[in-house]
Image 1 (tube, rainbow, N blue to C red):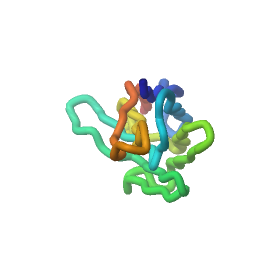
Image 2: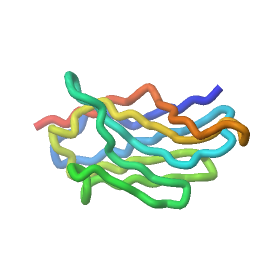
Image 3: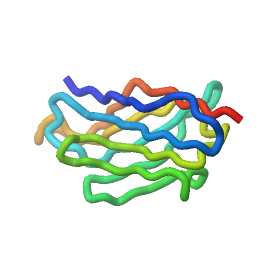
Image 4: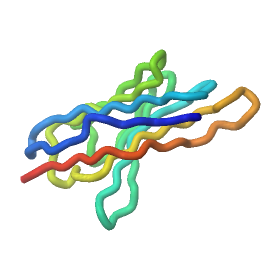
Length: 121
């Protein structure tokens, strides 16, 4: 059974830093890309950053220059280093992975349970 488990969330003051981690475990045959999304109360889930197996990255404009996504392919783990945090970064952060559970199926998107990040003023 495929699982994504996030960790590293918490409470931090504005201007501070946090590092989120996500490990993909279970019956993954391969993972094409992993990423982070976030959702604040009453708002839609939005993309934060993604990284492919080859290391290509994309970031939301709101986090460029402040957040860095990285990946350990051997361990199927993705990280999100968050610097210069702002109150508007407060949200539940969700890890996702695009991968295949076997060579005979198309890639699908999988989600973690989310981890809370709260940035105080």
